[in-house]
Image (cartoon, rainbow over all chains, first blue to last red; front, top):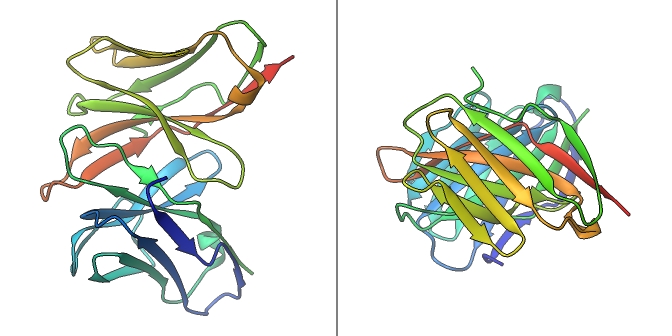
Length: 113
Length: 115
């Protein structure tokens, strides 16, 4: 257990509405990541953070933004949700060692109607 | 461009026998490889890893083999148990400039262990 929680765990929303997902960690990890998981694609990196207020884009960042105002929280925002953003979203953390292992949260299932 | 591939979407194995899951990668910059196991409605959980300077790593019933010349890794589970039924993801690791870990995942293989 890496002390990662995600909220909400499930959400149904409508196209065009803004949505914010929260990742919370309790162990002061420096690096945090957001992924989405879709059938046939495995997990794909959306954005990551390497410190408070330090973030960068991953492989599938279009339509998403992130913020990290304190070490323990990493927020993922869909400014205007689309049906293509229906997915399961996972948050992960690492410590920054050369042989790091990423530990994942329980996930958020998001449905955009 | 799929840098990490798991070509078998599913695999069915009898309980007690060996399960072999395969993964291929294309980028020589990857220096660390991991296997994750995922149950429905849960996050992926770390299973075993291997550094690019090794060719084998064992942890109990799980062994990962790395063939760098072929850019291929495999996960062996011996003996297979019903609780091993899950989706398995391989992942290859590189580094972003800021030190964050870049993980590239395969598509996953659903392993079913039959009693």
